[in-house]
Length: 135
Figure 1 (spheres, rainbow, N blue to C red):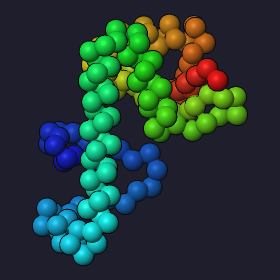
Figure 2 (figure 1 turned 180 degrees about the horizontal axis):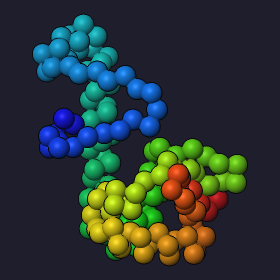
Figure 3 (figure 1 turned 90 degrees about the vertical axis):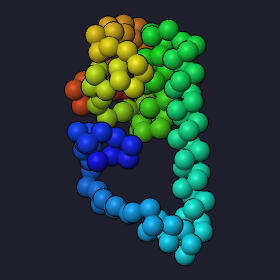
């Protein structure tokens, strides 16, 4: 089960990965032995909270078209790979996943993705999404 998730949720690794599972007690023991781990976990939690706050603010401030583009830019910054032409490539995300991320329907995301493609702001296939940001 994913942290805080429902038992029906799952995750798929795109690359080879090693999975670790620690109980609360084991984490506390590790932090006592290596205080820098506690600091790193605290920093990670703060980054996650800031990211969540930005997503909530985006939902309150931006209309859906802007939320789609803002989400793609944020995801490209976090997980993307720069391309020679200046775009940032994301591994493919389904329209459903993007919709869940920004709090709308898959149909609206599909409409907005097509609009962004026609405007030359993104390119995408089943394998990737290239986000083109102004220089």
